[in-house]
Image (cartoon, rainbow, N blue to C red):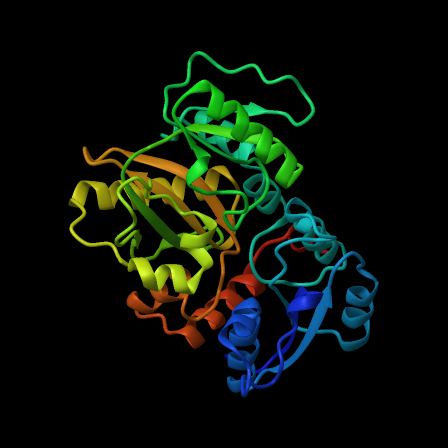
Length: 344
């Protein structure tokens, strides 16, 4: 691949240093993805600049107009502190006729809105847990049609924010309390789903129109206490000490029946098309002991750190990290944005 000028955009607090020397792991973890992407792009011979973005696009516009990058590598996961606003940044790039990596504005908007995602999955008859939405500031009227246990989470936040063992509710009193907790802690609506007991499965995908699914990955919950449900809480996902103490890890999924494997790959492609996802994405599932598959959510632009699920899954497929970044760059360059299709 030819050497390119690449502008890497990220949250302003996550611009990485040039070296890891002398830094504690807890500090490195904050911007591990940004460091991995930037250092590997530079090692591949590209000319790379980093730009921190928070609540203004002035510097982004100036950098594009003055430096004229070949592509913007998008590592933003929010804008102005809001995780459901990053699609506006990508729309801005399209208005500037600037090629970029990752998902398009429509796909970002749809997948970041968990309620809208659930509604679209239902429309397309894609199996997903039954759900109800409780709007912040409105009276809580508990639904009679949903079956306990129920799982409560924010309708907008990601990275397991607000998710804990208390997120699983077995009766109306605790359900009402947890809905109120989500409203207060996350300042968002609460999404309540029927809890699906089973294996936590992740499937990565690459592509714009032609989609390639990656090897199926699984979160193993290790030795959690018997009274703890196997769910991806914030501690399970991000607390290294907690993971080590309980033997929590991820690996390529083993011993899934061929029919389940085929269904996971098929549903992943259907979900990506239903949500208009492009570039790269990850879809999260639960697989029940009887083999039934339920889609939980879709993640546009999932974490790209070299040691995380998406890159490890790609590596098993024979796409090493440098090759993965090159593929993502290529998909960004070939994505047919509206301005390209229109000949602008």
